[in-house]
Length: 267
Image (cartoon, rainbow, N blue to C red):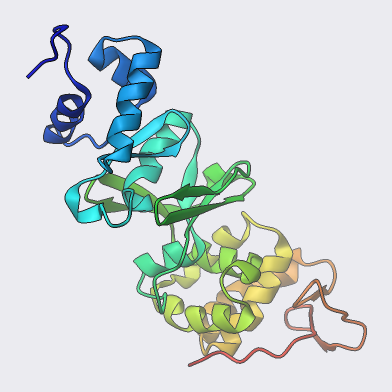
């Protein structure tokens, strides 16, 4: 079906993409497929967007929204983040609560999809979908696993790397109590032999905190796998909560940690 000018109409264009299993495209792709001017392409895509047939999580990047996701107003984040990062040529991985969920260690679906990049970027708001981004040095060294989604594969930090990140970003997952609670389940998926290498990709204080939190979470065997790494790498004591005073905090020599907060995991 074509318009009077002989070009594909926009709705036919996205239906053809979807029939091939492709649910992502750029404005440049659309312009080439429709064979019209940039302003005409923009107008056509705006019409589709107002109809709820497509959405734009990032400038110049569009997703086709199938009927089952129309109530969200967008594809779920895990179904478009890999394509968006490929289009931007940016290494990434899903981490924190989003990663924990893949390993059965998140008690509830997180309100935002959490993604690590080399450099931070503005969060995404697409319909009801929210994506938060975090900067991570040495991102190419972070161990990841591949998981299938209905639209392809997504990279997710391994259980060991996820545990490290949780210790580094407790305020973005609900606090230390929540971190310890998640670790009590995530530890079952962790390989003790892989923990030191995961820890070596992050600041040493993260490993110091993680060892202590793992012990509280009842995962002493996983904590033990970090002990030698911390003993060899930690040069000074670090506070459990950096933003709180630690002058009178309990000193824990095993982790070179200043315990300046009480942690109560929900085990």
